[in-house]
Image 1 (cartoon, rainbow, N blue to C red):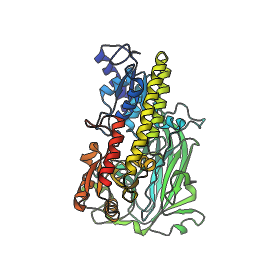
Image 2: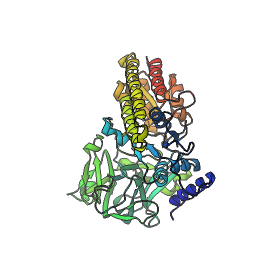
Image 3: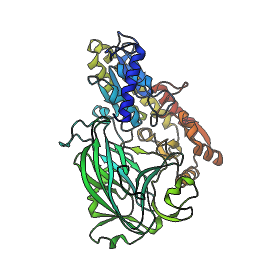
Image 4: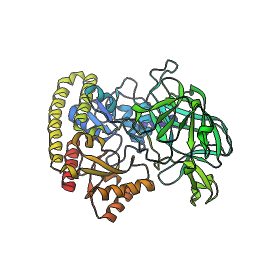
Length: 519
């Protein structure tokens, strides 16, 4: 049994043993006569409590103050999931994949397991695409798992917990190729390393509909060819299913890419991904030359493109011992950068929908209809509570808009630790002027630090904003604020704390914090 599946199975057994039960009960974890609901985050738990009142017990997996992007579930979390009568996650890759995999593996098959962000779209929630930064001197190359597999007749049993593996099967070139990711504390994580040959360890594993950034290093100029295939892991207990046959990607390293194959499309700027399309069973290169996002991506057969690694990509190997795998300190290599430091696997849609109150209302409607389905005897109670709460949220929406409107438009510039406030900006006319990194688990590059300083100076921004749960990871923003003599203010993003512990309070606090610090 694979390690992850074995851990979940062992955790369920241990959790049940702690309760003195031999099997999973249909009753609640804490109060046998009530149904039990589990949510991934405190924000979702609060929305749920405002619908179910005292008729259901509500528990959350990610504790207050913790980061849902990186939280690892515990034995207690497994126990809560095992007894739940409904589960609500945000998803759109907000939560760490370990949370989602544990939730999906532990929840009973007959229990609603609802991804609110996706489900809320049917209730008129508005979503915003994530747009990558393509302001680099070279192409930005990653790997992607595209699609959900539901349209592929060759696959069966695919869920959001399934993963895709892109595996190297062959390689040729004048030197070595290393595809790796630099994690938050500077440690490299290897995906492909041809210096010791090609084997099953040369692969990238991704959740469905996600992509990851990585660096691509080459130690000699010339033409390199990397062949990859793709498989799907339906779950941790079954054999991988074949998805896509071998395709070869060509790199022109320090040589004229147009002379490698005069009929090929040269990719030399913007963002590209070597992508396994789970719906069609094909490996493609998805290319976005301008940074317009998913809707402008062009799909190419890997055999029809050449990826340019120009002489501008030459850089010296740093003295850090962690990078000895690239060669000796001071030697030059050709490298396509990963653009952001740290593990950064994400989807195409910004998952932080709740920062637009109208989206939170859509969440509440999904929750209402779900709990009515599992407890129809209390349907009118849930509908009445939901209607009352929706009315409160509609009033809140107006209050947030009115408060932020008091800030002069020329001063509505928000700078934060990570990119979590796009919906707030879109809904309430706030310019998201800058953030340190796209995700809290990533570390800023020198270019990102420089851009942050220039943004604050050029826009004459009087304050930057920190999330309480991310203070320990916000050294760069704090240092920059001190150096530029700007105020540091509080804003809540993904989690509550002891001072702000409801969604309504969070949105009011954020609006007033923006007004007080920017107005």
